[in-house]
Image (cartoon, rainbow, N blue to C red; front, side, top):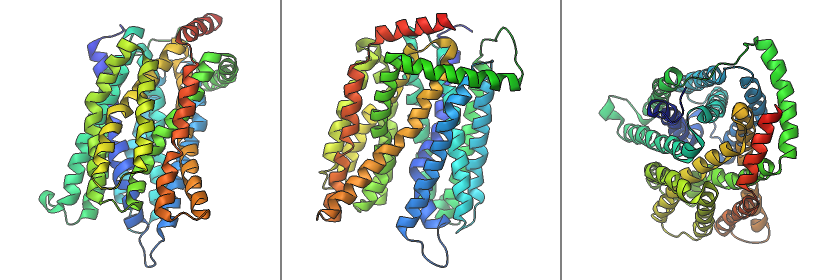
Length: 438
């Protein structure tokens, strides 16, 4: 398959449009609130702390599962032309589990818990193979722009469906629905259908180059495990890849923490629900053109410099976030985050793609995604621990909460410092060396 063909680039990018509906409507939007208000409802009211703990546990179980599987799956996929097969499997898993959430009855939090866990595994597992396919779609010259198009379409697609689902939940009678609860359940179905339909182009039009020799499944697993062991050694010995992965883990931890804690943070500060949802929509629709702009910016000034720009913006967000006074300040923060979030993510993906051998893309992106899944562990713990410590020394709850968000700045500072040490040219030399040795 030829690189940089418009049809394959669009087909590849549309998968981001497809699965981002899950990230916005389910993960960031409806599920956290519905989990507490509906799935945890019962004869005895469940404490919010317990409900939040259950939700956090669900995210952790899914994240750790994918993190453990990611490098193994990537290594196995590189043994044959099977990246798309794995992508189809995980997308199917995510779609079925998401639709399944619509069937869970009130108070059945355990079933909702496990359906959500497997849906997140489908979403995150599929991204390993979706990311790795970029190396057979785009040339090195086009990596930044193509990666940015994927993220930008993801923001737009996720935002469009979220806006529709918010409208449906606020005005259920307009759609012939009996209640807001029924509207939210229908929203889960719309996410599954959206995800399934817009996944079709990547399955049909992105072709993997065939391997010289086909291997049986058992042999692929055996060879993949051996390859995984070798890759651990390569990552450890390759200073550039190792430094970038460590830097990425730190600063993307800060990004993911802000993404996942923003609604909770606003809720604790008693920000109006409509303001929070509107802010989430702002991030999506600002993120669409901004991600494209960051792609071209990365092409002009370099991906690493573009990432530095995004890190600087996030440092500002963490400091200002601690000082906000009005509900509408969330709108301003949403605009800033929308401007840089997709850019940091897309340029990180394209920058990493330059540092690795193309033939081992799934394997190395397995490590990349593994760190991405572990990334959401340290930041929330740091933020929560800081808040508890500050409250223990005598600060009131609101002041401790506001001050705790500044602790996330440490993630951006440390990640940026390590990224400064990454030499892209040296990384390309290491990638060529690795390709020649295997």
